[in-house]
Length: 457
Ligand code: UD1
Ligand code: CA
Image (cartoon, rainbow, N blue to C red; front, side):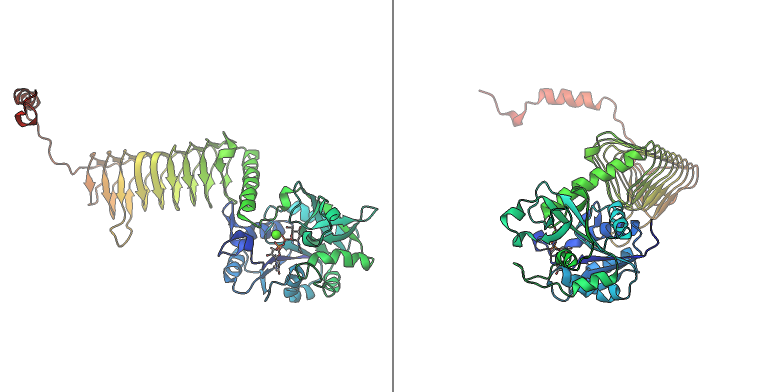
């Protein structure tokens, strides 16, 4: 929307004490991705050209996670957590050398939408020096309040601890997102922010009142409350998850998938679902799952890191573990677990089966209770099942082993040697039959009293 480049500074150095966690707050996950990843994603989608993340000392994990998401992200360390203005100062070098808009985002507001950042930038383009994104809170507790002058213009931001009773009654709150026309605007204000407040912290939010004092144009843009929910506690994390899931479900439905009971289907941030896919109630989809057009996922399935081909059917009660790849029209039925395996086009693995480190050829039929014995206690081994093969029920395939195309495995076999194409292999002890045995046995028992002859009285 604009040619002006923009820098995002994402603050993530806070200790996140309210999470009661050993893990840095921004690494807690929402729809399978760290909070920080969601914020970075919004920043990128809004066309912010450069990104700097501010972390606390020892937050190497956060730095590693951020660089994994985007190797070009610049990392800064805030030595001591002296407040949000101090955190921005930690990224001073990135700001100083930057020409363009500077947006400060908080790493703990993962539901942020790129459109809102666009709106803030549009205000900068139309003449604002500083833009604050505000929202009407149902429950404003914990948020900074936006103070407007009698003409409705942004005059100051008051943190809750410093607010008077009247100010606390205000419901117009600060989302934490601030946009500055240039690095000069930001640096000019930043240098004058003090820590004369209840927390003795340097509040970035003081920039609003300072800007007004400088006769700069400070504006407020409203966003909806859901989008700027700050995650400070586990309860807020759960609330954010609810909202994020709703968003993800709405998006897959908008793309043409049917969710029979949307509230019971859990998706991940990167779930890709094609059109005319049907997902029955109670399905959990972990990260890196792709479901192609016309596939059906029946109730009570759990999957992650898997690909489900066009027209394939999964479940009910199936588990797809990492590396499960189902080709077109494959069938995976109830109580089946598949790991690191390819199931060929039209192949069927329908009942009570474990398939691990295996390739199942097209149209093969894997009978009920088949187990690929892929692990010998030391290493994993592969099983290959050729196209059109038939694996009789309750067979164990001891890997490494190859079942040739079109071969037939008799039920109940333990197969530990390769089977040639079109052969029959079975490892069964021969069946014995004793004519009349059961009738004779019953006769014997009738004559002999139970309990070794104890007489009833
Ligand atoms: C902040 C805002 C408040 C706003 C709310 C919205 C300030 C002073 N207050 O309050 O007006 O309504 O967010 O969610 O900005 N951080 C650092 N270094 C620090 C302190 C914080 O990097 O020294 C980071 C945190 O990791 C976090 C963000 O800044 O990502 C906000 O800090 P937090 O302590 O969560 O501020 P709030 O009390 O939520
Ligand atoms: Ca917060």
